[in-house]
Length: 78
Image (cartoon, rainbow, N blue to C red; front, side, top):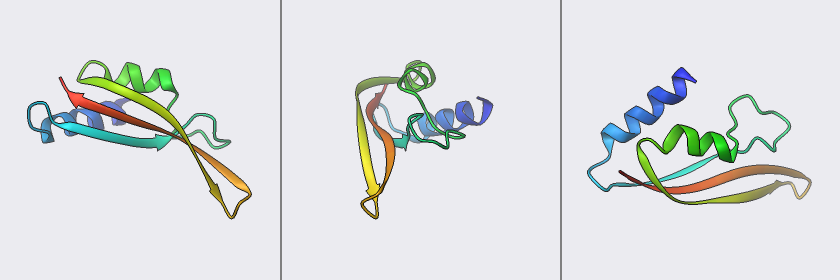
């Protein structure tokens, strides 16, 4: 949790007022979930600093066999 909070604070500091941020992260739907986010994680971690405009699920197929799941989130500095 602490590394994520530091990461989010750094993004917040780097953005100008009303700056926009597009997050693409691994979803907790992947088999390896070590650094993955759930939709609820995204809301809990980012909602205090950002106005979340939308969260979408995305899937990428490697070699047409292996599915990798992502969340794509668009937000604006609050």
